[in-house]
Every structure is written in C-alpha cells, then in structure tokens.
Image: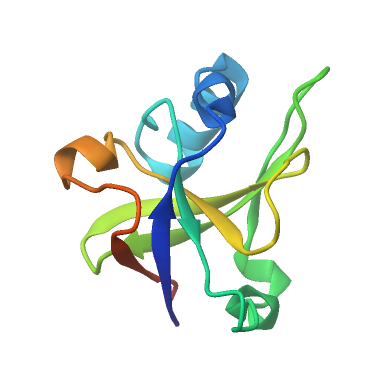
Amino acid sequence: MEIIGKIISGMGKGTYFMSQDIYIKQFQEKLHFKPYVGTLNIKLDKNLKNPLVNISKEKFELVKGEGKLGDVKFIKALLNHDIAGALVFPAKTEHTEDVLEFISNKNLRESLKLKDGDIVSIIIE
C-alpha cells in the first residue's frame, strides 16, 4: 500500500515524546534502530479516505507508555521507497486523522532536505 502526503510542520511535541527513555528503548528493541527525537508530519488529502483503516490490526505493534506517557501504536513503513521507519499513532495526540507521524533513525527534514509542502510517499507492506 502506498500513501501520498504533504510535509507539514508539527507542534513540536514529537520531539519531547521521542526523547523519553521508555519509548526509545522499546522502539530500539522493536524497530532495531534508535529513533531520531522528533517526528515527520505528513498531511493526507482531505478528499481521500484514510487508507490505514483497511490495514489489519495485527500489523500494528504497541509501545507501552507509563504514567502520563500514553501507549503508541506503530506500523513499519518506508518513506519515499527508501527510508526505513514507522508510522506512529500515539494514544494521546492532538493531530487530526488526516495527519500521520513518521519516525526513523535520522532527521528526515535535514537529510532529505524536506520542507513544508513537499510531497512524500509512505509504503506499508
């Protein structure tokens, strides 16, 4: 499955959450890389139905939060057919359903020279 979206700026909260040891350790264990402290925010076209609703729930994995830090569901994915990472779905989020958050082991805006408005693809197997 391929999802196309546009890069948007986030609220800066992904940096805080992705810097928490409880998440770092579990993502390292499950994804086999230390995630960069931040998420890449991707906005889907409002006129299209979110294609993730058709994915089997068994494909999603879970990172457990504790205290004020909520659980995070995730699914492994590729950005632009090349960058391994995952789409993350925090239980506590302020994003609308048309915004996806992608994590990887690098600062994607910097390494891929991405800016708001750039189009990217996400592949989910």
